[in-house]
Image 1 (spheres, rainbow, N blue to C red):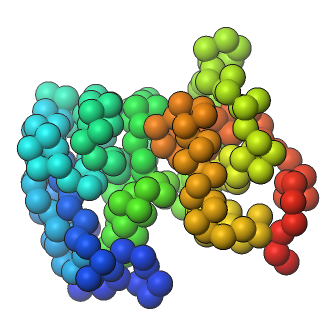
Image 2 (cartoon, one colour; image 1 turned 120 degrees about the vertical axis):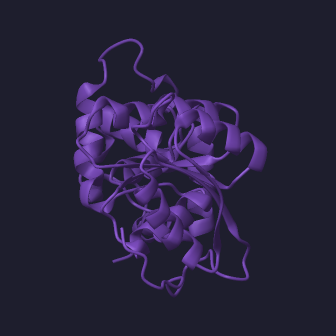
Length: 246
């Protein structure tokens, strides 16, 4: 990646003066790590507080530095991105954004099941990387837009059927929460869900938090995968309950 000058886009809630996003960056290729670091540090609202060349070091740095976001390569020596994600999320050390070349392999699936909040391609441009880091820091999560639905469908196709598939708690969701879950399965952001279901974005955030709690999920990405597994997005938009803005 190159590192052109960047600035927070208009309307971004996480901008200079609204608090600095502290990032731990892990990639086993020094040149890639340096390029990513330059992009992130060029933004006024992001600071790379630690860099690691493997998963063990990434976990150690997260324990020491308590970053907001850990940006991890999925394939690293000693401990890969999946194992590192699992430990970082389980200990509540940071939200995790996974970077990969995107071949839909088991590493990516494993990282999402481990609770990664986002998934991004290494060829993403500087603005895309910063947008993903900011989204993850806001608690929204991020999957590369170009591959969101393909990734979720492919992930769902690999999931075991029958007992053992999470989702027993879906019956406890309210109709509106099921609508929000279906929208998550479509890869929509909080603002897009709010627009579709004619509600405030803050209300959407509340519904997402309640959904994650009721279904015992770690991230909205896992909720999106579950929605696909349950076939919730298969309904047409008209099947969603409640009024929607035109």
